[in-house]
Amino acid sequence: MKRIGIIGGIGPESTIDYYKRIIRAFQKQHVDLAYPEIIIFSINLNECLEIIEKGEWSKLIDLLADRVGALHRAGAYS
Image (cartoon, rainbow, N blue to C red; front, side, top):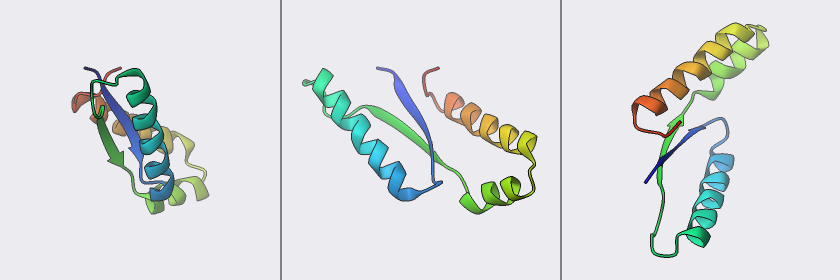
């Protein structure tokens, strides 16, 4: 089975919401399996907001790319 990678933590409530939605969609397609394998990398909201406030877009891109790479290294499917 493929692992799903999610960047979360920007808003814990939204992370919970799309986690639940992914599980519901998975269960509709895979009635014989309970849950998909999901890896969540929770990023630091304050760090992201500081970068955005400074307009350091390339730094934000680098940060997000690093987190995507971490998910991939952890086994999330690409």
